[in-house]
Amino acid sequence: MSTTPRLFVDAPLAEGAHITLPREQAHYLINVMRRETGAPVRIFNGRDGEWQAVVSEASRKSAVLAVESRLREQTGVPPLRLCFAPVKKSRTDFIVEKATELGASAIQPVITRRTQSERVRTDRLMALATEATEQTERLCLPDVSEPVTLERLLADWPQGERVIFCDESGEGEGAWGGPEGRARPMLDVLQAEPDPSGSWAILIGPEGGFDEHERAHLRSLSFVRAVTLGPRILRADTAAVTALALWQAVLGDWR
Ligand code: SAH
Image (cartoon, rainbow, N blue to C red; front, side):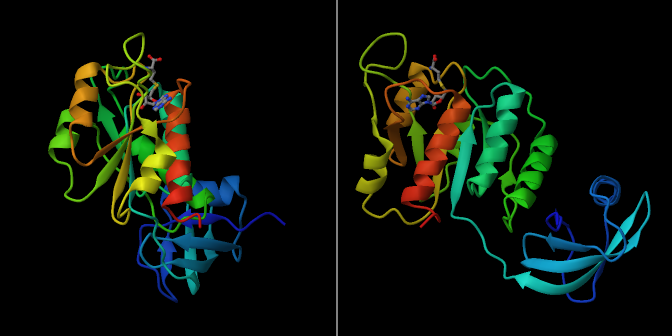
């Protein structure tokens, strides 16, 4: 028995409501998942929890769902924003999908001085995040924003939010990292935070890393927590997954 399809619908959900699916969702449900009239579907809209529905009309080009009963109350995710410099397309796609599975509340592409891939198709990233939300049994979509520059991101930083700055600096001068040397281990930084409640963000740089001006500026800010993710250079996607997992394990909703 294959699992019941789970779909995000942008419509109010209540018993007896009928929802006409957009073309591409109807195509997926009817032609790809081969569901027919009467088939059960689980739906959510990010506000009203998850509901049981059934296919009430089905054709090759359209589908209507009849909403029956609520299966789960609405729940959110911890206030954890992933800010990352876009890298090459397949790895950026991977970062967005894993950030969604790992419970990021928001995904913010950031253009740094060494960012290569400045063009980001936000609508495509939102579609990826929606698909990952359906798969991972989340009830809320992450907010996926248009890219901003690192300067703008920091200038508009929300009051009270702290950021885990993943700083690849090694010891002292040399090929990678600045004079400040390696930052403190992320686990130590999280566990040393006097009051870890409230909003957090994670900041990941591009393939070429942060430059020394960015690093010095970041380390000068009171809301920034510079951390090392160990003695090896991780790819940006590896670093994103690693930092998100560690934050969820220590401060997030994995307990
Ligand atoms: N500057 C490196 C590549 C940076 S990796 C080089 O030239 O090869 C991309 C991003 O992943 C970094 O900017 C940083 O945010 C994160 N990252 C990678 N390895 C890390 C580590 N060991 N500690 C902390 N952050 C790391």
